[in-house]
Image 1 (spheres, rainbow, N blue to C red):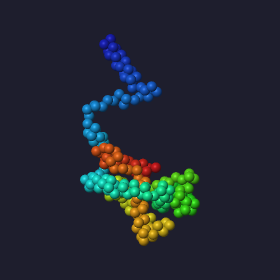
Image 2 (image 1 turned 60 degrees about the vertical axis):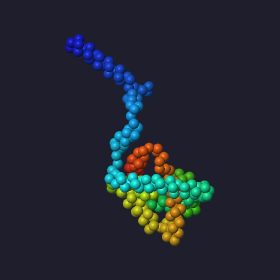
Image 3 (image 1 turned 90 degrees about the vertical axis):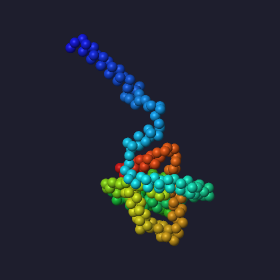
Image 4 (image 1 turned 30 degrees about the horizontal axis):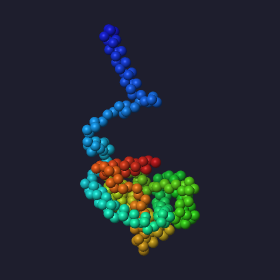
Length: 256
């Protein structure tokens, strides 16, 4: 090896070692992102748009979905949220809590059905115990002693069941009033409503036929307990963000 080659090799090794040392944190772990610099002149909107191209979701009906999204936005702003605020003003907290507990106890029937369909034995036993304790000791579900006993509510729906058995999600769908969904989950919602009406737990389905105001109360309670607020992300790409978060959260729910 010539002296020239030796000096070149020494230079490369020394430079690599120096670069390696720069990439080490105080705890000894490499953190190359620390030295990544963004162009301060980069437009934030263009940056977000480029980012969400990498997080694309199958949405062939996007033009229609965006119109429904805008409809939901205005319905929420002008009707649903003012109704929820009025509901909060005229009903004490313990009444709202009782309404929520009652409908969640009713929903545990479909949770149990879908847990059984997914062969989740332990979760099925947990939900069965919740139904027994909350319906009896909780006075038809107005209270939730099961949670205090260490039996938390575990939500399952028919959309999850279909996904568990391998049915793909299909196109993304923005449903009027209901919000983000996909073709599989939309079929699941319909199936859950049908199952609940056929089981008719505590004769609620029969009573609803004679008293449609029960549907109204349940809808208000559902919106009251839903944290999503349209526009809260403060981004021109909120539609894409909601679409992506919904899709990935459903994947996680199916996988658990």
